[in-house]
Image (tube, rainbow, N blue to C red; front, side, top):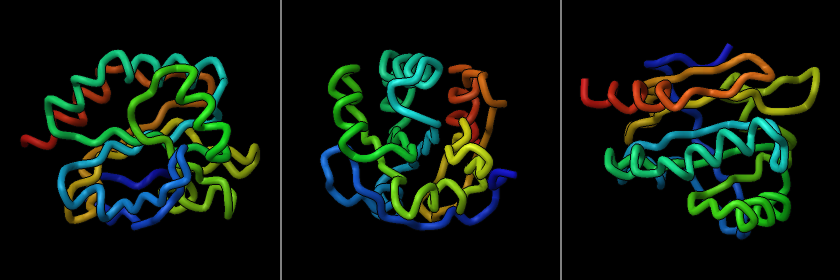
Length: 154
């Protein structure tokens, strides 16, 4: 089960697609963070989801929310994919220990070794303000992100 609203989000540091360390607490200190876990780069549903987020980045930027993708891929795969698709938001490599960050959020599918399609909106106190997950093979609707961001105002 993924972390629910009100839960403490575990702090972590992962390498982004360029190899730079990214710490959740540092990102969240200046604005809320939308952590978007996804199974694999270069896969159909994941690509469709992240391209939709790329094409609707204003939903996040207008609300001053930092969009961050996380998968078990290596930083090298994430960089190639990010450049190919024109993603201008951080993609974090939960590569080693394999899926440890996803697991700490309850978003790791042990049986297949991949992150689930789970999203967490985290505030400056590292508290989960909203979370949602879809079943394997399903894409998250953009409306779910809008609803999660709207919950920040409430």
